[in-house]
Amino acid sequence: MNNSRLFRAFGYATRGILDVFLHCANMRIHLSAGATAIFFAFFLKISKIEWCLILLCIFVVMASEMMNSAIEYTVDLVTKEQKELARKAKDAAAGAVLIFAILSLFIAAIIFIPKIQWLLQ
Image 1 (spheres, helix red, strand yellow):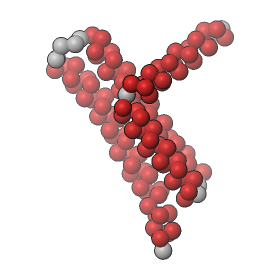
Image 2 (cartoon, rainbow, N blue to C red):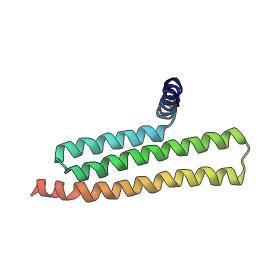
Image 3 (spheres, one colour):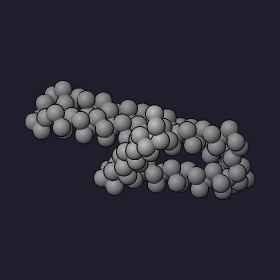
C-alpha cells in the first residue's frame, strides 16, 4: 500500500470515528463513562495491569459501538421499512455493545471498589 492510499485510509477511519461521535448519543455516553474511569484510575493510582484492563474495556466498548453504528447504517441503507430481520440485526448489534459495557462495569467494580473501600477506612 503506498503512502497516499495509507493516508486516505486513515482519513476515512478518522471521518468514521468523528461521524459516530457527533451523531451517536450512546458513543458520547461511553466516552463520558470512559473519561470517568480514567479520572478514577489516576485518583486511585491503579497498577499497570489494571490500567491495561480499564483502557481495553473503554476501547472495546467504543469499538463495539462503532460496529453497532455501522450495522445500523447498513440496515437503514438496505431498507427503511419495518422488517423483522432488520430489527433483529440492529437489536443484536446493540446487545453486543451492552454485553461489553456490562463486562466493563464488572471489571471496573473489581478494580475500583477495593481501592475506594481502602481509602474509606
